[in-house]
Amino acid sequence: MLTIHSEDHRLHHGAAEFYRGRLVPCFEMPSRADQVLDAVRGAGLGPIVAPDRFDRSALTRVHTEDFVAFLETAWDEWSALGETGDALPYAWPAADLRQDVPPDHIDGKLGFYAIDAAVPITAGTWAAVRSSADCALTGARHLTRGAHSAFALCRPPGHHAGARAMGGFCYLNNAAIAAQYLRDHGAARVAVLDVDYHHGNGTQAIFYDRGDVFFASLHGDPRQEYPFFLGHADERGSGAGLGANVNYPLPWGTTGADYLAALDCAIADIAAFGPDSVVISLGVDTFAEDPISHFKLRADDFTAIGQRIASLGRPTLFVMEGGYAVADIGGNVTAVLTGFSG
Ligand SMILES: [Zn+2]
Image (cartoon, rainbow, N blue to C red; front, side):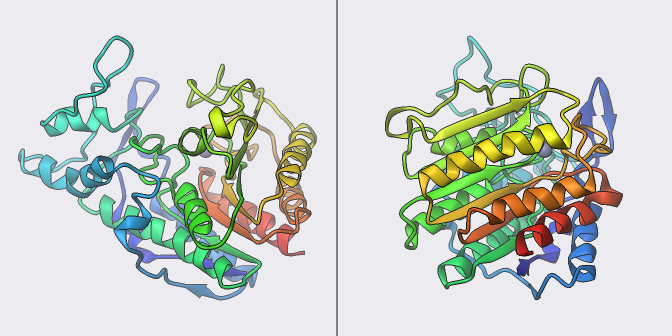
């Protein structure tokens, strides 16, 4: 299996995030990708290549023009204030506030284009984000050229980013951008399966009213878990997309056996949809030792996840999402990938 990886991910390294009333070091850190890359090498998974550079228009197929423009210039606008620390939002257009008038000031823009404060913007963030999307796009291009699988080692991750919003360590939605690329290059139907611990709210929202991209997610129940405001079982899609969205919210403490039973259901949903290709939002924060999550999966369970995905028998792009038990992230990711490859 080909792995696509860019050293540009190091350009994004937020100093701190809010966690339960305290500023703590960002859980989403460069060593995550280093550990995964080492494990890919150690497992002999296959060649590792740098991403191709794609046109900006591949991004605006799923993100709004104004949002991409915001990401491109946010650091410059922030640093023009004389600030040298990370740019972070502190006010959001929540209930009873206007969501239709973008502010001019960068403090307002940061909240307008974010769902939370877990999205520090640094001097190198845009370059890293752009290269992360290029990794996903290069993997998608690899599939369109006949490959059966690829692994886009994306960092920063993407599945919490919506068409017009960053959040949860995510800026551009790499999986959604890749799925759209596959649609634009020969695949009539694409399925996105999100196995990250957290609901892929951004991906769901991007494709919610479309019948050509199926979205299935297994995740911590939003009644208990971030992102809290999307990911319930009754969200089935709308309009042409009705029936093309399926959520499996699971309680804290979910074991590997319970998880794999739900995954079997999601796999059956996807098989019934009949996609030409599959995109996996591959988070391994379902791991029992993950510092911010509450499922109980072990290493063997990740192998089983890969085997079940392989049972679909479709060209498959794996896109790296979450996983914060840094010492174990590489082994858990390669367990999924080698499980898939057999
Ligand atoms: Zn996650």
